[in-house]
Every structure is written in structure tokens, then in C-alpha cells.
Image 1: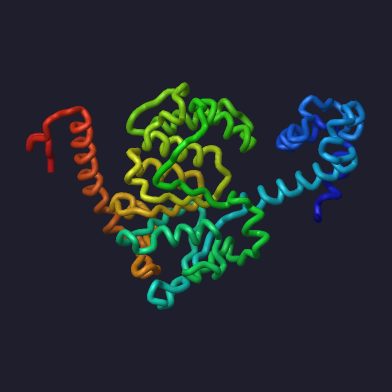
Image 2 (image 1 turned 135 degrees about the vertical axis):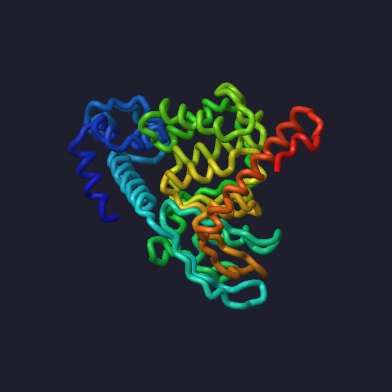
Length: 341
């Protein structure tokens, strides 16, 4: 590894306090080896001399082994972060549709852009999302190729990211951990090395409640959240905590949240957004839309000024539908007087 000597020099010349201040993830590395209580005011090798011998023996390591492992770990972490932070564009090169006809398509999307994916149920929208998620290199049934910053990715580059380049929000978000919303967000913030845990947790919580149709508290168990509340929580988490520069969303209109606000929020975080949808409000709020037909990319439409102007009317209709839904939820009778067209 090219930078390992740099990190070896760092670990041999700076105290653990200094290393952890610069690379907080080093603390998690040490915790994995039951070294959470190690003295951090000295060099790693010096601190290890005061550690009980059976701790390292349990892992079959010598102090020098641990030093090298930490150097390699920090290098890998920094290379991964650099790769993630450096994503400025994604390109889709067409493959074939279900009829084996070629997709004469090459589309490049930049950070901050929103792309909607539309087409009949079963037409292949999810297949395109899957190709993007796995960074396909002509090795999926569609034969599509996904480039990052205009470059092909080899298998090492594709899989060493460990899924960090792409975040996917599916239609169903199910939690299995019996944590409160606060505990869940704090856990994510610490795992993602957020510099100010309390601040980012508060932002996520407030954002999730703004998006959700029904409010919830920090003490609510995540297993008790409704589908809409769960989706709102994960969108806020993705916006404020996730490093993933590419976000895939499948049919957000069914989530029971303020879907337009959610899409705009993610786009403002300079992420590349792909949203599969049947909703004209979402489709026309995108910069472009990909039309799927017969399992393939049929064409790409750039949202025109005329279409953007029609959003005013679509939003009015959508607001009226929202009012009717709220009346239904409240047990009201739906009369002609409630419908304002």
C-alpha cells in the first residue's frame, strides 16, 4: 500500500491522542482489539507495553503487528473516504432491453442533479436502480455500464467501497433493533464519525419530523414507527449523516411523507438522486427523466420550461388531494364542498 509508510511514521512519532484527534476512527480500531482503555498520551508501541499480554495473544498479534494493522487500516479508510468525496458525476452507458435491442443511450449526471425514472409497473425501473447500485460493468442481464467521474471501475474499486458509494431507500423500511429514535441516530452518527454528534442527531430528528405526516418523539422505539415515519427518518439520516454521494429511491410517493421536500433536501446536499416514480409531481421536479420500456431505457427527456410551469397546477391538485386524505383520516365525510378544483 502506497501510503502505509506515512501512517507508520505518524504512529511512530505522534501520541495516540494526536492520531485519534486527526483520525477518530482509530479509537474504534483499538476498541475492536479490547484496547479502549489504552493510554493515549504516548506512542502506540509505548502504550502497548502497559497492556496485559493476553489481550494481544488472544488475537495472535505482537505489538508490531498491531502497529502495522492500524497503519493499513487508516490508509484504507482514507483512500475510501477520498474516493467517496471525489464523486462528481455518474455515467450510464446503455445495454440492451428485454427484446435484446440496444439502448442507444449515454447519460452523465452531476452532483446535485435529480433524475426520475418512469415507466409502467414491471417495465424495468428497479433493474436500472440495481445496475446503478452494483456499479454494473456490462456484467448484469442488461449489459449496462456505470462510470464514476467518467472512468470504468475494476472489481476491486467496485467492491472495496463496501456499498458506501450508493445509498438505497427501498419502499419498505423495517427496523429490527429495539432502540429509541435518539439511540438509533446517535449510533449512526458515531459510526459515521460525525464531528458533533448531538448537533447532527438534532438536525436529523427535526428534519425527519418535518418530512413525516405524523410526528414522533426521540423516545419512540424505531420498531414502533409507521412506514412513513421510518422512511422520513432514513431520508434525514441519508441527508445529514451518510457519505454516499449517490442515492436511489424507489417509489417515494407511497411513503406517507412530504416527498417533494425530501427530494429537494437530498439534492441540496450535493448528492446525485435517482427516484423511481409514478408521480408527475416528482417526475417533473427532476432535471431529467428516464423513460423505461420493455426493460430498457427508451428515451431521456429533459424537463422543459413549459413542464416546470405546469407544476403550479400539479401542486395545487396535489394539495387538494392531501386535504382530502387528511379529512379521511379524521373520519370526515367527503362532500363536494370539500373539493376545490
